[in-house]
View: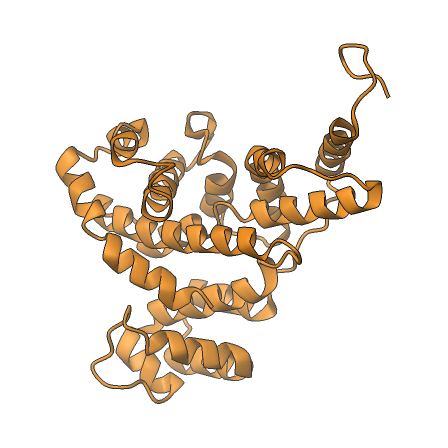
Length: 287
């Protein structure tokens, strides 16, 4: 197949063409939102929900219940005494925080798996966790909805493991080897479009869908610009925490998203002072 310059496309170029065709046709195989995660989201959005309903929901999934108990007992949540039951966990942490933990634990089991790319997936998952935790810190500072901000941060790059899986499958079928740098470039370049497909399939809240699609391009967001800005700031803070060589502090501080959020240098100081706390959260939730 000739490329735009008239020359014959290389195998890697043909692979990228196949990837873009799949995305444009909406034929990317998307992960299902785990049932428990879907039910936790619905419960969290229901003003009539209570601690008993949440405990009962988590109890139905033994693996999820075990994960939630382990996280609730981790140093990040600093229980004064060991948490011995889900009811105790709700009493100690509150329904909002426990919903967050249950959703996150359930999500990991369903959406972040790409056989053969375990290291990449682990890195993506830790970044998502750190982004979610930093999004909460920024939301508190800006006095906006903390629970919504967490979901935006946690899910902003949900398309990345799916792009990784799609390319891996296509490459195997076409017997093409892709260099890591090229693969990572495609993951970074196409994830927001795939993330938008996932947001639609999972019926995610509109502000979360907007953050997924526009956090890197917030000037083009038609709505929920503040959520997109906040998610962008959280993403950069997470990069600085986990990969400081790629995101040094001076680069972080110079990012325009902070100024647009009306965050001043001393506000960024406060956010950076929360790095140890955020890292503890990442380690607690990194199942």
